[in-house]
Image (cartoon, rainbow, N blue to C red; front, side):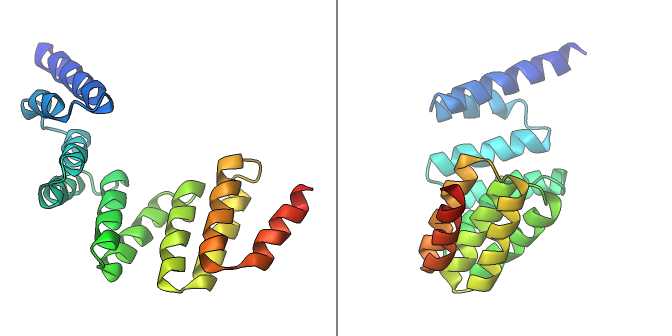
Length: 166
């Protein structure tokens, strides 16, 4: 029981240090507490911030092995694969994330931008429409929708949204 309390405190402290940008200190606190998928995911994020992408990938995979339902590590992997030009791998991770969190408007918009960059404008538009249905009054979703349409040069859709606002 006492060890569990210490582990939770260490993890909370590591998160706080991570949020403050003290990645080395956060890593030290996590070293003794690498048990759960969340701690492995946080280690991956620390390595991302430190610029060690390969080590970050390893931690994200460990987090997924620990809890295959976790979306965070998969989303990070999708972003890494996208940045590395591994679009099929990125898409596979986005698809899993979208299935696991079907009501996440921001996730849909991120995936829409990914598809728009690949030239899959119809897929991107479908995701944008779904995101707007989930959060019709959310200003951030509105702005991200407009950004995604802009990437596709889908100006008719942008004007349609703007007309509805006026």
